[in-house]
Image 1 (cartoon, rainbow, N blue to C red):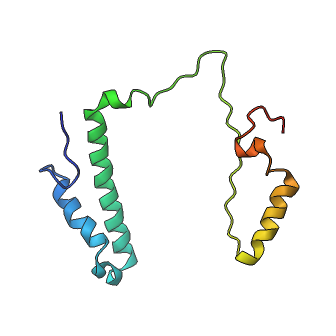
Image 2: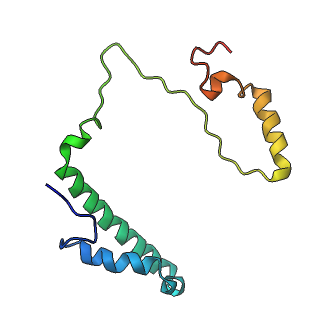
Image 3: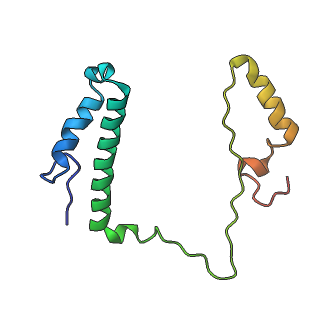
Length: 118
């Protein structure tokens, strides 16, 4: 079973998608009110999600790894730190100093020492 890409078939959502997607990125979109631009974007995304859901139903075998069960008595431990902050070029030095000060520059935090002995 082959499912064509969105906008390349004759399904109910192909024609609205073909109208909305180019409008979303056209020069005309700049002049549209923000509420309308948001509605256009949301509608195009909804149509794409509808297509993706139908595509996944057609290829169930490809997604059998999506459901993973951990055996009884075992557990998953994922440790990590996410840093999201903006630094100007003059402030990068203080970022590096803080990373070294907390000890986050060692192999354990860079994925080189899984035992955590560094």
